[in-house]
Length: 98
Image (cartoon, rainbow, N blue to C red; front, side, top):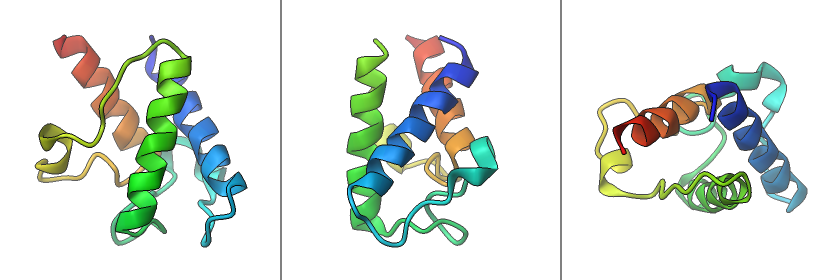
């Protein structure tokens, strides 16, 4: 699976998250540069948990098994949840290590 496919899947998860009525909505107009969590992102800790579930569901539908709320993801110095692209890179790097 290519990084671009993973980015597209994460952006579909953004659409699912936004459609479920969460506020503030994630503005996905920046594509892979869309901020998610942290100083530039709109997700708080509860929103991040819900978003992670949406991403995992989308990835599973694509045939990409992933568990994103694990010690590896949460212990990184630079959060993989800071942007769509950072999350895609984290997912791709984890799949290559398997």
